[in-house]
Every structure is written in C-alpha cells, then in structure tokens.
Length: 161
Image 1 (spheres, rainbow, N blue to C red):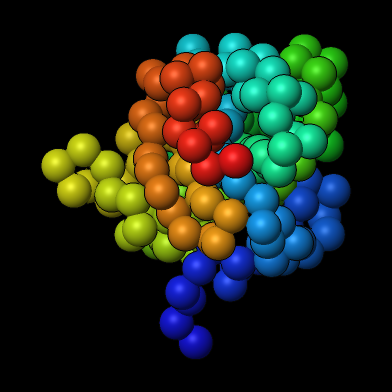
Image 2 (cartoon, helix red, strand yellow):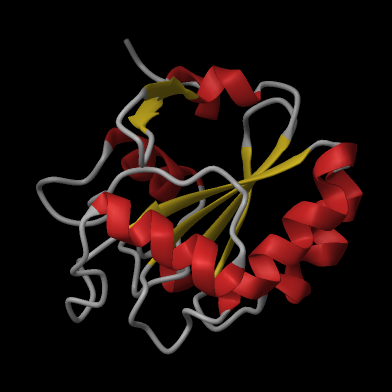
C-alpha cells in the first residue's frame, strides 16, 4: 500500500504501545526528532510551550528520540521519558527511539522527508530537532531546520489552526 497521508503510518510510543497516526486525524501536528544531550535540547521547553498554548485549538507535538547524530540520545526509552518530564515538563506524546536516516529509517520519516525535502532538495535529516508541520488533513506542509526555534513556527501553526 502506498501511503498518501501522515495518517497511513503508525509508530511505537515511548511506553511501548503501537500508535496509529490516524489517532491525530483533524489535528495540526508537529513531528520532531529529539535528543537529550544536544545543543538544541533546550528546544523541548519551546515545544512544550507551543503544545500548552495551542493544544486546545488542535495542535499536537510528537517527539521521536533519535540517536543517529553524535550519539546524543544514548539513554533507554524510560530514561528519555523521565529526562523530558523532569527537565522540561514535556507532556506532549513521545515515541520510542527512532531511526530517521539510513537503511533503518522509520517509514513515517521516509514519508516526511519525501513530502518536505530539505535544503536543495536533500531528503536526509541533518541533525536533531528537525521539525515537520502536518496540516489537519494529514499533508506535510513544511520542514523546519534544527536551528529554527519552536517560536519561529507560530505563524505557520496559527495559519493551520
């Protein structure tokens, strides 16, 4: 089956449950690959702030820890979950460690990269905290680079809410 929208995928939550992305149908979604020991890790605070501000209007943020960049996410899923909660008060859904590049790329990330290529059409994710914005119909609207702070996504998020 060829995937036509974000909703055609599923992933394993940080707690081990299989979650269908169709559970987020009708919502505006930000998908972000995260890491606990990265220079961009403080973006967790900005992501949580966005989530709290807009979740009642239909925004959801989905965090996907990834250990493919400088071994900056060496922890186990349970430790990642604790770190995010204790240090940044993360309350948005988190998923299990995920490969975003290479032969083990999660199908969801293969789809996101195809739908929103990076700079000069590259598909590879360059670093942690690359963010994808998905509209209420499950279509990928935009890719944001690691250096783009969560607050820089507000205008695009609000236009979709």
